[in-house]
Amino acid sequence: MKTKPPKRRKTVRKEKSIQIRVTDEQKVTLTEAAEKAGIGVSSWMLTVSLEAAARKLADGGGKT
Image 1 (cartoon, rainbow, N blue to C red):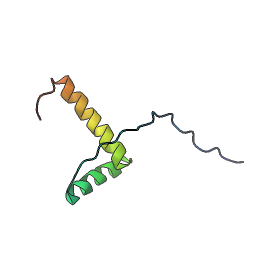
Image 2 (spheres, rainbow, N blue to C red):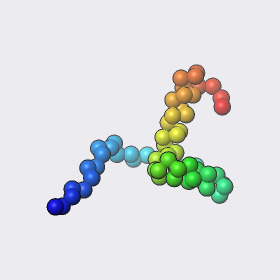
Image 3 (cartoon, rainbow, N blue to C red):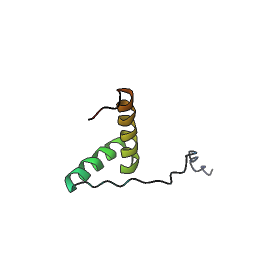
């Protein structure tokens, strides 16, 4: 019996990008955190950044 391939999630096409500069040590840290979460660095950065932005906006958006 053949198994069906997993269904793809419907996602919104992302067309914009943001580039940031990091040191080698910072990149290692970010990569390790993403791997621990079981996702890619880009997805991890997006998730963490959006969560932090939402918290910051809810708190009045002051300086960090």
